[in-house]
Image (cartoon, rainbow, N blue to C red; front, side):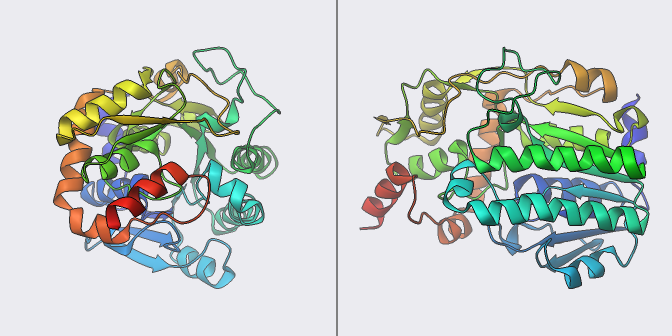
Length: 351
């Protein structure tokens, strides 16, 4: 499992990335472009991402469109991508509660369509972006291992991410499509624009840079397994290469717990925000007080090894915010919904 082998394997390849304008997708696109892929086709409807986030590289073709649109799917599969990284999704928990039918269409039917087109076009590998934060339910023992599954899930997003894995299993068993299911944990890093349905880290940085207190839903003792986007991209590159990954599911995580109160303090310190934190009640669907994943299977199958210390990754993310602040401030959107604490702070600042 020498590192140069799996990276060199992408030279000259044609690759499709759905959701390639998002944080993980844009970083994966950049990595593949720099590794010499012949053509990287990015399909994204920009419903929760931005065109300016897609790397401007000569071997990147951006197609604005939905994974539900048959015309766009025929267009992006016309060149016969050898690998398909399916990252597009209606993200995430609160969004799925507010829009359960759209969640089912995009995450369920959309994934089915991608698998069908991948099979018919002869793609050699289909890498599915699953969610470790979703699949295991709220009562799984820590650290979370791939053997544990739960049918007692808390949101439509969690349900449809499970559905996606089940469809992958079907296509692998029935049609012998070479699928890999990568379960992400609390990804963060450059490329994620804050917003109503986005993750805690970009929203915290956004508020901290405006001198606002950071709203913690709960006691602050809750933990998450925050994983730097660069480590997730490395895991995806490995998933697209090693034969041992085919038909398997594995966690892509940091393997470390971080308390939310400590996260808030680190962000305030890095940004120089003196406003501190505020506390609000936990959301009804937020049933996990702790998250910690095992990465043993990923290490065993593909040699995955997260190597970005949390404060270092956080620093890179803050630096990206500062470098792109005008675009981020213009793009960030906080509409109606359960993200009321953040929305109220943003509205207060704009007033």
